[in-house]
Length: 111
Length: 109
Image (cartoon, rainbow over all chains, first blue to last red; front, side, top):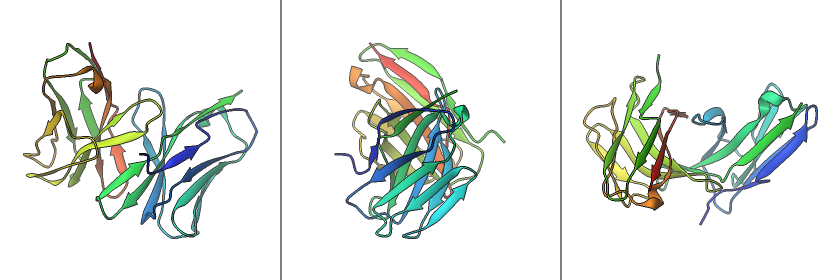
């Protein structure tokens, strides 16, 4: 069973378009992180959100934590080819003392 | 500052062979983790450690062992390799966000 489901699984868009990636669960998390992973490399942390309803911006990326802390979204404005990669969400639960990773969204931005 | 270093980057094992995946971090983090990543499945936690001398099982520990004799090193041991252990393995350390190594791609044939 997968604690965190991401959608869509694959996304291919043209440069300049906007997109949103979703991370959903029926469980509550005390915090949630987003990572980007490029081929042959480990995931790299983009952001951590800890408060229900929290919104964080990182240049053209906007991250939101759901009010109930069960879901999150990542919105990219005016996507660029450098945004191409696998995006992973990870939620932390105090019971289990670990982050649980989502299934990932593979994004391709076509020049 | 090297961060998290994993070796080897690639390895092919025959069924039944054993090997150790090495992981070293130079950030003085107490928490260290081993994950495996399979296509469409995200990252699954194998083992983790909250400090030297302390280890605990994650979601998928069967077929693996770990040790943590120092803060820096957290090796993962595979005994009697099986095809189901073909995967990409990532070591990570954290405080509080994860810093991942670049991974070890293991194929068991």
